[in-house]
Each structure stands twice: as structure tokens, then as C-alpha cells.
Length: 265
Image (cartoon, rainbow, N blue to C red; front, side, top):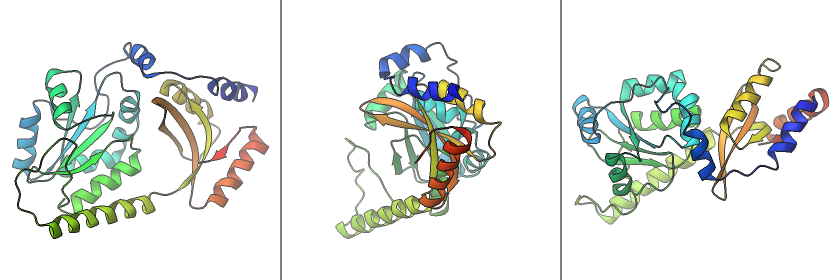
């Protein structure tokens, strides 16, 4: 078990900045590897396709050097339920911000961090904006909400003016309240506790660690991205518990029986 202790000691001392990530990731494959069939073509043609088929339009802003984006490719976008929801109700589209069209769309929609996701309803109106790394459960909840609620909550990105729709103040307040209630409900539904057993500056190190411990445990293992002062870290979480007491007990077992340092997440 000294192997695990050495990993924790080393990772606690590592701080990797975004530029370093860009250089490392440049050697990795650049083509999307998920099971989701993202539309190939222009942004406008993808949006027209969605409206023509009566589907929602899902837009993923990414870059080849974005490590959280790659993590979602290898995990979230391979989730069977996510793939099923996309196929049934969405036209999914990727925007590479390093390409000419992607750069212009990045400016148009005020994209500031990666990944950023936009969802347009069947009328082509922007109804959702998410600026964070999503695990499969969070993305499933997001896709199900908009697919099942006709997506009437309009969300405008920074620097984008209203399109001239005649909404009263009361209408805007009602929409804002609906959206607030949805976010609070989503937060309550997805709140669980885990045992955090590792934190790494590179997602490949995180997955290497996951593969090393996968044979020891039957509990679900999750890797999530965390941001601190502009630096991305990848946390390895083991198990999923409804109460903090259950998670705390599990952490004690990991420390006592497996010599794996763990804290409740």
C-alpha cells in the first residue's frame, strides 16, 4: 500500500498550469471519441436540422487542449442513457473554439470557460447555459428536464441582447422563478456523498489510478474535474452514499482495512 501513499504525497505537491496542459494534450488524439453522434457541418445547418426534426439543439464548446472536455469524452458522453437521450430528443453539435467558425461563435455567445454547453429549444431559442464539467448523472438530469418540459425558460448569454420578443416584466419574473426552481430541484436530486481517495493534476494519472484499484472494489468509481485558481485537478471518488454518516463510515473502512487515505466528498 506504500504505492498509494506515494501517489498522494506526490500529487499534493504538484501544481500544473493551463499552458502546461495544452502542451501535454497536444500529443493526444484530437478526434472526438464518444458514442454520441455529433452533427458534422456548420452551426447554422445543425440548428436548422434540429428545428426541422422538432428536436432540441445541444451545443458543446470545446478545444483539443481542454482536459475537462477530454474527460467528458471518455466518461459522460459514453454513458448509455446520455447517448439514448441525445439520439431521441437532441441534435448534438461540437464547436471547436480554435477553428474560425468556433472562434466567432465563442465571441457571439460570450464563452469564457471550457467546457460550456448551450441548449436551444425547438423554436431555436437559447434555454440553457452550463459552464462546468458534468458527470453522467448531471447531464442526464439536464437533458431529461429540457426534453420533458418543452424548454420554455429562456436564458440569454453575456453580451447577447434580446431578440425583440415582447415579454412583460411579469413574464420575465415567472421564467426566472421557474428556472430557479429547476436548478434547486436538480441540486437536491443529485446530492450524494462519496469517499475521495485521490486528486491528480492530469486526468490520465487519475484514470491510471482508477484502473489500479478497480479490481479491489465493487463500488462505483467517479472522476470529476475541480478548478482552483485557474488550475484543473481530477478527483477520484469511490462509492455513492445518501448520508454523510454512511460516507464517513466507508472512509474509515478504507483507511483501516486498505490503508487508503479517504475523506468525505
